[in-house]
Structure formats: structure tokens, C-alpha cells
Length: 481
Image 1 (cartoon, helix red, strand yellow):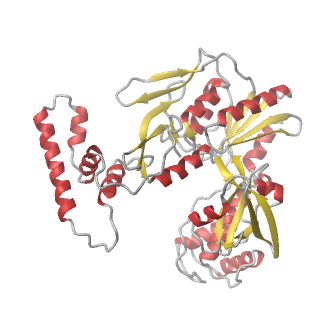
Image 2: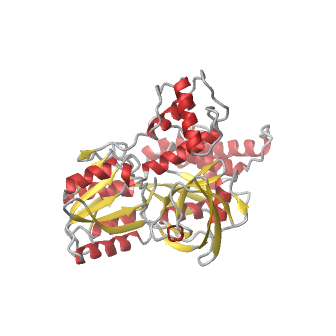
Image 3: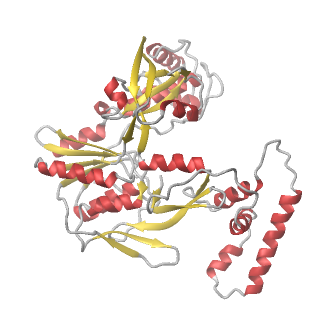
């Protein structure tokens, strides 16, 4: 859930980091790691004399020198000392949105933010014998070939997916545009084969004209705020306008943000040049107001679907349209993140991601830590109490555990009859688990293990993403009429 001011420059892969990272980062890292109070004092008192600053540096360098030369690594694991200092510095900030990436991690992260992939167009969850398809994106190679949510991909070309790491699975599925890939798929008790050709996919935007009982409306689903998201949204709005559509639905559920400039460009499509889109405050600067760039704008009666995972740029877009343009928010209170991040590539190729600014809604309100309150509150399928933590033992009747609570809640969410959700593994819980195991071709023994957990979690995701079970969407249809 990160907002970036603008897309970062292309990050080139570099060799393994050199021994010396820039002195300023090492010094600051040790300051935070050791819990020294000098930084706070320096920022709050401008009258500190040069002599005190030198003394501070000497102490920090003394500590760094002592640790780098004499610290004994008794862990038995390889430790990159400078990397540890840098990561410790960032961790010491207590900011969940600041972090350190390797070059490859940064490339992967920025690709996920952009929404642009070269692959087959699915999202998935690992299960015992491969990966279970949770979502198939519209107009993707997977959809064209006939892959469906709930399918289990067991093999990609000659690579069996069971037991592979997520990174290895991604490597198998992704590939250059135009290359062919074969999939072996389990669909219930059938084994199917699919031949696909990978494509370059922009998964950030999906749009179409839909109908409620009496009205047509334009529907736009945004999965992220990427480089070209605003251009695609503009194309969608123009398409709706050309087809005389008056109602617009933006689906921002599970959208964790992206580039702040993308949100700004999308809001430009609804605001005039004399209207404030949002406000922003950087370090030691006054609040700056941002306005639309032109007077060309679209007018719709608007609705926005939000949930607990609507965050960052999504919240800025939804909040601005709610408070200034009268869009109704439908769903659950949003995440509550009102900060933006930027990235700096260090001399060794390491990428430092850190919070750069705070943003506010056009009216000056901050939603950070608070979220947006929907005009019409509709709960989605609850995931409270469900853990994604790996099950590292087998649970049977009479066991008591938080893992059992999670299992009971998932079974109930999927429509199986459980008599309790307090973590006690009752006989009724056992029978419900057996029914699930039978329905999904697992070992039917009524004993809860990691294989059961993975399948339960994956099937719950499929259920949540199925429009037929989407109470928030159904309520919106009733509102549109």
C-alpha cells in the first residue's frame, strides 16, 4: 500500500554491493539502531554548534568501527554488515512504508505497482499440488484459452509447480510477449491441457457498460494506479460519454494505491482548473494545493466501491470525488493511508524507499490512520480471525488452537456447517472438514494440516471475488435502480 509521487527512473541491476555504502546512511543507521537521540535534537534545534555535530559523528563512527572490526557473528549465517546497518536504520523509523530493496526486488515491486505484466493474466494461490487460479483477467490469454477460477495448475511446460517457491512459480508463468506456454490443469476430477501465448498485459484497468434493473452504467475496476492508468480511465470515460451513459461506478476495492501522479491525472478528468484536487506537505514545507490542469472534464452521477483494502491513491481519488463531486461511497471503511513514498537508488544498486510527503483531501482533511467512511455501509465477506500463517502440525478432534479458529471461520464462510468458532476442534468441525476435503479431492481424514489450509484459503478467495456473492455490488445495483 504505497503511493509514489511519480514513477521511478528505470532501475538497472548492479553487481553485489560494495563494502562501503554512503557514509551518511551508515551513520544515520547506527544512530537509530543504537537509540541515540541526536537526530531529534538536531531537527528541533537549529542553534546546535558545529563542535557538537562533530562529537556526534565521532561517537557514531566509533560505534560503527568497533562493531565492524570486532563484532563476532555467532549466528552461523552470512551477514552483510553494511546491509544490516542500512535495514536497521530504516526499520528504526517505525514507518511501515519505508524499506530497503535489492535491485531485483525494486524491479519486481515497481512492476506490481505499474500493473503491467508479460504473462498469461491470472492471480493465484498455492495449494498442495500446484496453484489454484483465484482470478482470470478479462481479455487475457488465460481467459481466451478457457482457464477458469478454481482450476488448479499443476504443471507449466515441463515444470511441476507443487512445492515450488512463489518466485519459482512466477518465473515459470511469466515470460516474453509472444512466447508459448502449456498448462496442465485439474478441474474437479478432470485433467485438462491448455496452450497459451504470453502477452504484455496492463491489468490496472478494466471497464465495460453494464446494466442494473432499469439503468445502464459505466463500470471501471482499478487494481492499481500505474503509469498508463489515467489514460485508460480517460478512454473509458469517453466511451461511456459517447454511449450516453450518465451513471459511473469506480471499483477501488483491494486497490492498495500506486503512483500519486496517476491519481492526480485521474482527478483532472473530473475537476476544473480553479478547483483543488488535493493538498500535499513535504518536509519543512508549507501545504501546497494542487489544481486541475485544464477545464476539460467529465460529469457523471458517480458511485465508488471501497473496502478495508482500499488505500493510498485509491483513498485520495475516492475521497476527493466524495467531498467535492458528490460521489457516493459504498462498502466498508477504507484502510487509512495519507502518505506518499519515493525511491532513491544508492551507489551500490540498493534502492531506498521512504515516505516523502503527507497528502490531504481537497478540503484539507487527513485520512491517515482514519480511512474514508462510506455513505452506504455494506460489509463484505468477513476475514476477521482468519490467519495466513502456515500450519506446522496436524490438528485433530479435541485440539484447541488459533489455527482451528481460522479453519472454522473459513469453513463457515464457504457454507459448511460448523457448530462453533472458538478454536475447539469438535466432532462437528471434523465432519465439516471431511466434507470440504471430499469436495476438493483432498485426503478425507478430518485432520487439519497445511494442505487443507492452503485449499481453504484459496477457495475462500475465489468465493470473495465472485460477483454472485458480492453483497456490496448487489447493494449498489439496488441504489442505481
